[in-house]
Image (cartoon, rainbow, N blue to C red; front, top):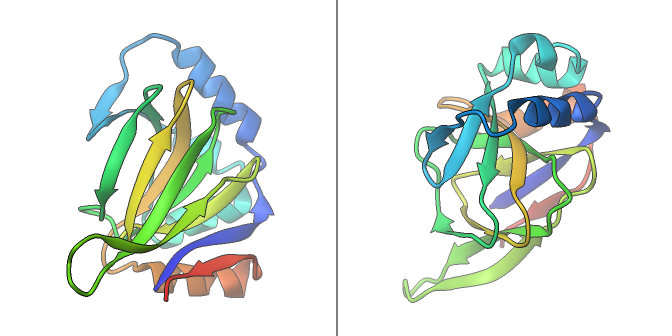
Length: 172
């Protein structure tokens, strides 16, 4: 099973998203599981043509998710969304781990680590077991979730056709 797919296009709204975070400052952030969140204005996403087309075609909802420093979000599969496009917006050292459940059910096997490239989008298969370890500072991520019937494979295939092939990681 594939864990993630790196989109070939670079973000054209990276700096604007960072400014949105700066403007938000300490104002109240919403809650989303173990994260804080703020919505991303539709008009801002429209400035990035590829991202906007993906969001429109697959009914994506754009948010910035914030994870506190020195935090661990345990292995899980997402509820309510089958896949997501993420882009790391901070320079904070953090890692997203993917793994497969052992046949005996006694743990995870074949751990794979996603280290984000600067201003790059990643399509994540959120139905694969995954976890996040955040280190020294806040971890802010643009996250656009896609609900059923928009599976990872459907969105990935569209990206390959419309945007071009980039790197991807397979789970065995």
